[in-house]
Structures are given as structure tokens and as C-alpha cells.
Image (cartoon, rainbow, N blue to C red):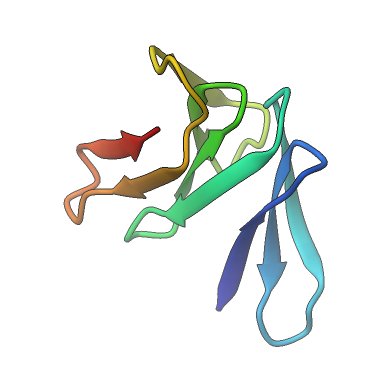
Length: 91
């Protein structure tokens, strides 16, 4: 089991829930990461930030991510749809 967190240091991090060990550090946002979610298959993470962007991360390759722009204000919430085909975000 894993846990994902967002931080004021502009990163999202994946943790081992049993040991507390950090598994991944996802870098790319330029401001606080305010919301995060795992895809239902656990292979991707979506993150929203005060930099007004949403990023979708492929956990097999931490540097591979898709940046979604378009919000005019800070992104406060993100979530994957159950079928993994959509992401919803709110600002």
C-alpha cells in the first residue's frame, strides 16, 4: 500500500504506507501542490498546484508527466475518474 502527498515545497511524494519510506519524489510544479490522487490502477498520480496547473505523472518514469494548463486561479482539487480516462480539477 502507498500514500501520496502534496507539499509546500512544490513536490508530490509517494510513500510506503507500512514503512513510511519515500518511494518517489515528483518534481515539476512551481508552487505548492494542493491536491493529489492515485489512478485506480495505481500507475499514475494527478496533482494540482497553486501554479494553476494540473500534472499527470507516470510512476514508472517520474520525469514523464503531462502538464495541463488553463486554470485562471490556484488548483484546489484533482481526481481521476474510475475508468482512468478523465481527470477532473477545480480551482
